[in-house]
Image (cartoon, rainbow, N blue to C red; front, side, top):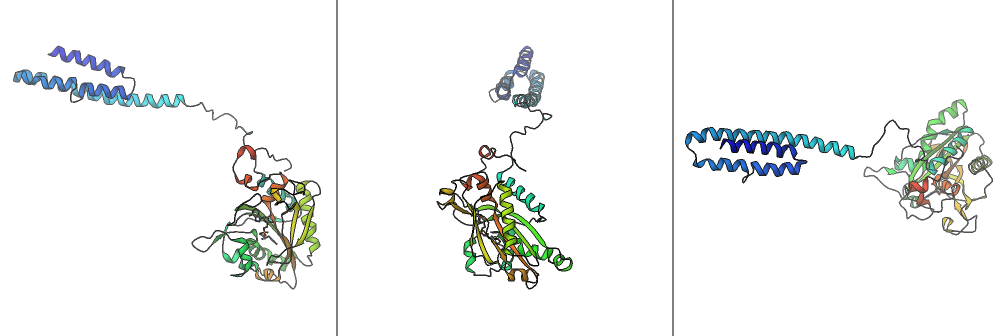
Length: 351
Ligand code: FA5
């Protein structure tokens, strides 16, 4: 009998040592410790032994059983560790000290034109302002002369939060805050208000080749004594010829916006088709790019600036459309698509 135990002890030792993975180990556990296992069978076979033999033999078998169970537990830990090591070794090697692969990323075309416009306007004395994307009805509409129920609101349906705030539909939402921020300096020190404020805008509208529900605008404002439409036209022309590094064909036509009087639509000759008509310009040859006008007295007054003393212009440049025109992207939706391959073709060529 004792010999049987010794033989089994050796067999178990070898089996457990040779188990290559957790499933082989579990098979061995069942083979020795399971209901029909060899150790269980030894215990069951004791019924024919004398009481004295049962005592000594039983103690030996129980010792073997406890030792086997303990060894199995140890092997489980060893094999788990080996499994993790094998998985780590199978992973692709990654050298954290290697220099970054800079060829992979590129600035987004909208970032490129935004930065370029910022550089141009900064060089002409404008400050660049940041403004939240979530604003109040007052900021987006009421403060810029669009009271509740004004029909102009229909043109700019946007996304409303449960608390009544909204995702701004136009960068004009910051006009009132900018006037309040710099109005005192204008009044007390005679420093003109000259600011641009780029930002993401949102509109609940159907998309097509030139309309997105999320797009960028860059608003600009200048307020001082004797500011006129000539100043407005000068800044618009300078900005466009700097961005395109050549003369581009534009047209100015009357446009209605409650916050300017008079108001204009500034359209750019379609850079995709050269003006002959295509899907990007809805076959008109022109794309609305930068509406503008002289700031309405109500807007100045609401911002704490005296319209009897000061005048100013404002414009709302469609930055996403400008990127479309500059980089000849036929469909505006490609700019938001996240297709890195197609976006990577644009490089920071002039910033
Ligand atoms: C406005 O948003 C006015 N706040 C602009 C303005 C500012 C006028 C200051 C006068 C003075 P409009 O809705 O036309 O106007 O938008 C301005 C420009 O943003 C458009 O000419 C176009 O270039 C761009 N734009 C408007 N809607 C979209 C859209 N859905 N997708 C892409 N670009 C758009």
